[in-house]
Length: 279
Image 1: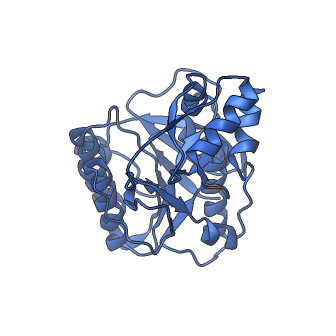
Image 2 (image 1 turned 60 degrees about the vertical axis):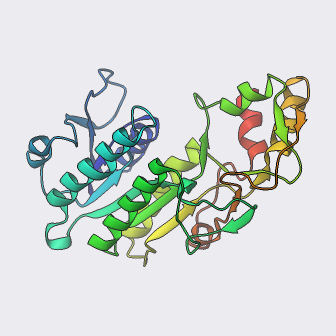
């Protein structure tokens, strides 16, 4: 069994810790403010990755590290604090002798394609947004440290507590219909399952790629998604919005590499996941 450190135990990190602990792994979660509930099956360390002193005091013999951080707010300073300062402190602690396997949770926001193109792990990733640029630089920094590490790029996460599109659909929103504006999603349960699956592959000795794109099987036009949601909730349909031909981050994400590795999605399309949320 592996000795695992999860950096950033939000909803996904907490669920992952419980899953891995249930499989017999020795799991430790790192948070600035650990939960007081005893519902979790693994232990926590109170630490801030922005503090070199905090990181230097951690055990150095973890086999696996999951980096699943979430900035307090979407600002350049907050992103740099985590993805530059924090990451550098952790790399200094855990890259010695190349012993610790990293799984780095990233985002499909590192792609800046605007015309509905299909993108995969080999596609150009040169984001325009400064926060996404910081994430992309962190990816490169990690892989340069060792190509054995794995970046996992999640698309738009939804699930209990992440119901933005449901709220949007209830407001009869103005949505672009033509040209189609594509949206890519992954249910948060699949986020947890993907990370646990990748760990299993690593421990089984399977050759891993340095990057996997984690998104469901069904990138779909936002118009189609919102229209379907309004029908399920008996809301007024969306209003067609007239726009230009160029839209920010309009792309279709390809999960073929992850599925070829053997992962099967619990929620392969938005209808599967959102119908459960609505019901």
